[in-house]
Length: 277
Image (cartoon, rainbow, N blue to C red; front, side, top):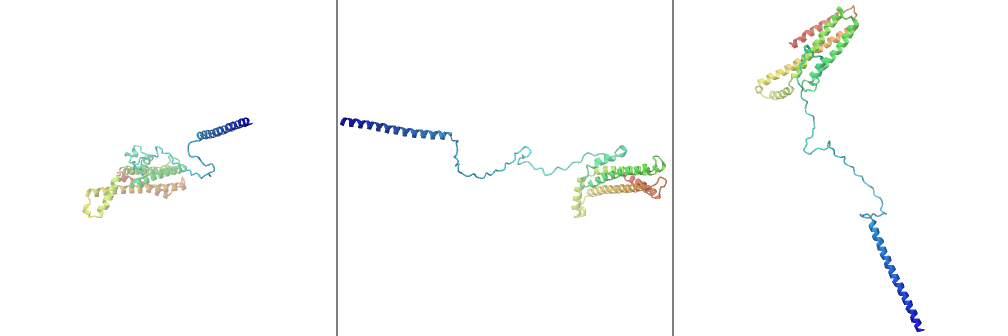
């Protein structure tokens, strides 16, 4: 019995040893597989800081995006800023002569260049207004004449002749004004006016004779422009009176009032010739 017990113990010990070795080998294999699985998971992860899946969402602030800089908006720091447009230079002189074919449209076209002038601008605008008003009178008066009298008759000629004379005098006066306005040296006038203002506050003998003469010349030019404008306004007024008279005038009933208007127009036409001598 002793031998069989020994053999049985040996078999049991061998089985226990085999089981232990198997257990250790399986444990080692399980650990190795776990490490291998962990390494593979690490390889699959994206680089960067892992995010906590349980973290609450936070508000996102969107920053405004500056507009792209274009060639128009780009300016070097040393470039000057254009704050104002340079003053417009006067164009070339245009001599306006009705005898050479200059019309009221030609005069108006030239005068539009000068309406913003610091000194003669109001005179240029006055010339434009006068010629536009004269054209209105032209249309209204001859519409009434043609509706009242037959063209070519003595009565028609009686009113048409002074009307034509008045309109021609207005155009010639306006052309004369326009030519003088074009030749007026505004920059020199303003400089002289500033210097005269300073000199008038000092001793009289500090003013030069040349400055005195030039100043009187400028004042005479402006005074003449005023006088011509007054004459043209007088002619326009008489044409207004004539147009009003023609509205009520009968073909067979001329009045003393119409004769008085015609006589005044003739007087103003003759007066206008004085400035063109």
